[in-house]
Image (cartoon, rainbow, N blue to C red):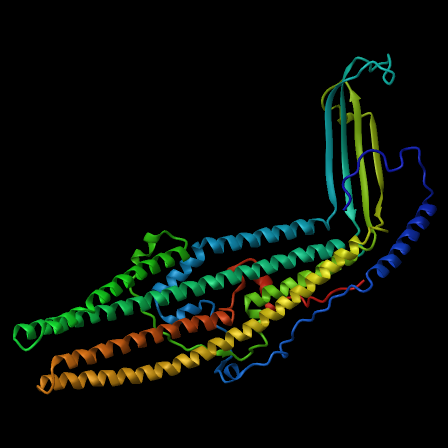
Length: 517
């Protein structure tokens, strides 16, 4: 884009150009540049192609999953049925500094797109110079009227320039920055989704720590009970000091375990507070979670067809491919002439009447014409720029393909894990039932005088171990549910949630075909 021009037209006031000659000369240069431009781009073209939705085979884990017509709800964490979790996730979305930073990057990217778009519009500017000037007495001014006088030397100029953009250079540059802004918006959605998942996983861990602490305290009570029995047996003359020492030995380790769990609970509170963008003290109000998974996740019936438009990292990759395609078009346009319309109109005055004397100026000047830029030889710079843009497109396509492959892998991995953990949950429940039955039998036998209480306590120890295993498996299932939802791209985003989210929807995504000239 040519800048504002001022003063006389190029060539000076005494130079005259014949219009027909100028037109023939311009036509010659344009034709020569068109031929040179087409020839100069020979051999530089993209090599990569995006994977189609039907080019990636799904495995048995995906094919055998229960299908549903719907994607996860936007507030997908509500399926855990814990109001405290719901409020904490919303607080994290509203207050997390990292998410605020990602949103600011989106605004900055939209602003850059606005700057690029402004280059397509006519550019108008005013240049005003107001000077109080003392004129010398020399060979130029001589002994005339201005010599050794102080006058106002004022100038005012209105300038206009407009790029005709025959080859789409400015338009493609604008579209490039718009696609980058859409990429940034999709990346902000990735950051939000990661934040949601981190809060849910930290909350699940917070719940598990409570359960583990309960079991540890129950074990300590049991160990104390065993120690009391051993001491009574020693006092009654039917036990030994070795039995007392043996009963006392595990208690310090159990107490250490309780202290460790209490430390981990405190750290877990701090983690949740930090995710919500709050100070450590804000999590002190958290009570014990009440997580209950109300509904098992089911895969959308449109998987994997609509995965590319729902998972934000894939959406971001697609917009990045579209942006790189625009970059190639822009690099192509640099091989062709750049023609701008320029015009200026101004007044100048050397007066003694006052500061604003140019408003009644003695001299007016104007200029109207074209600015033509003809890149003929640049040592290979434009070919190198086109090569760089082409390589960037190929890299973006490869990154998109890798993201799509990784997305399907993540979904399959979580389904495999969920199926395995569910099977483990069934076996753990069976083991828990056996341990409970053994404990009940030992308790009845003790009450009937058929065994001593140490057998009861031993059976209770195994029962505690199975309870702990069952709680850990339950927490793993809760976390896998979150991981599967994240692998699917989380909940759908409505247009009202963000002024940029509409740009991320599948229907808006460009075909990102590379243009040719």
